[in-house]
Image 1: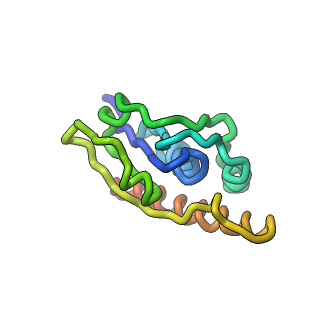
Image 2: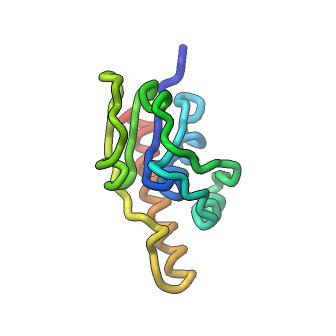
Length: 140
């Protein structure tokens, strides 16, 4: 049986969608096909890689990709992680796709010292990780 496809979308596919992708592959990769993309490809954020490594999840080999309409319309779940992606998500022609919006602050916009910026990345990482854990447990 084919695994349900979860497609995480964000503006740049550099932080939040990559973190969600990494957590779901780690926690539920045996049950879900996991992909992520952005309205644009901003490249993988090195701080996202670092905070995920701290959480025991390696996303260093991930690539930053632009939304693929074929994957979008094949997805079981399309989950936007930022308001911009939610508002500007391409039209999904498959009526069976479940679309959710899980909004998280953009850690890439954090300011301050490196320590303060990394603290914001960790906060967002932990919030996304918690939400992914709930999804894996409850399927919603």
